[in-house]
Image 1 (cartoon, helix red, strand yellow):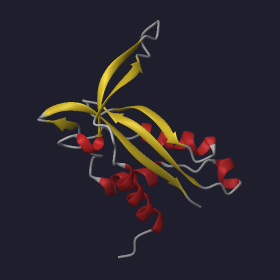
Image 2 (image 1 turned 30 degrees about the horizontal axis):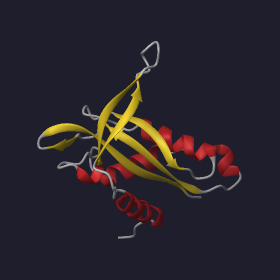
Image 3 (image 1 turned 180 degrees about the vertical axis):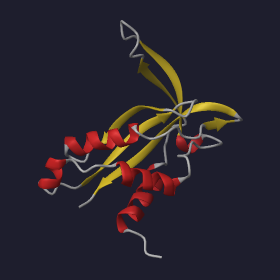
Image 4 (image 1 turned 30 degrees about the vertical axis):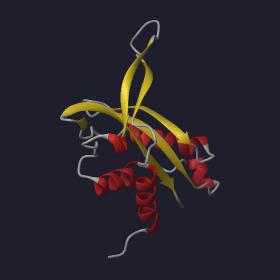
Length: 148
């Protein structure tokens, strides 16, 4: 079975970047519906430190297929032959929705960074992370590769 080199690289990077040093962190999140945009703190656990980890519906292979089907190479980056990898962070909520999507390591090109965030924002609900059978918010890190 022949495996695409970029898919193999994506899997390798995904697995190696899941290692985190902090088990629990407080994240200040802003409620966009609040008229004064007050923030509130929430408990977010790191991916490695939960009993049941959140998962994309269908597993890693389905997630890679979703990324490959959804990702659209930005026209200007394609024309200028810009390649790179965007390392994104997001939180899987207790309802499975993804939020707090952000770039933690840029590719060096803003259009690739925005596209990576767009792809993650289009993902369906994930299975929820749990600690001792209690649903918790879990922070995940995911690389999105752009190769020509």
